[in-house]
Image 1 (cartoon, rainbow, N blue to C red):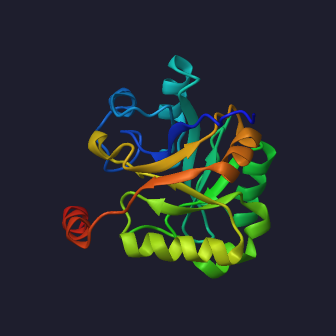
Image 2 (image 1 turned 90 degrees about the vertical axis):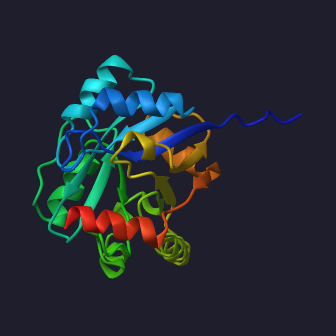
Length: 215
């Protein structure tokens, strides 16, 4: 009899007070994740890994050190399992090389999202051989745009990944994946081949409320 695959619940895109416009501390976001039954989270603050390192030192089996980097591609790119922060504002070539040198798991967040910095689909295709995944389900994105991202990734034959893009404790775990356990970037690459997405994006009404707060 074949072994039954065990799945864990993971959110691969979480922010803390080390990111702009986020008030909740790393510890508050971690507590929210545990209370919601998650098993792993990637802390992906904007252009810093300080908050992620703080949490990972306390709970290395739960927290993945990540960074959402503003680069010159344009848009943003996320690296997971980082040992060192990658500086913002550098070229695509520099940023990708810096992430690859750390054997980071590399993915493009929230494509097609008009309220985020995003990397245009044409640019994603140009670097498809240098990234591991595209975010196909983002908890703060319009549901329709998540569907477009999923269709794009499928057509381009790029692996999909999902995350809440949480900026508050309430949003942690809103979207993510059920995956076989993993311990590093190579393990995650294998696990995603059997992953099951969960969650969805937000309604247009909630997105417009968020836009009003920001601007």
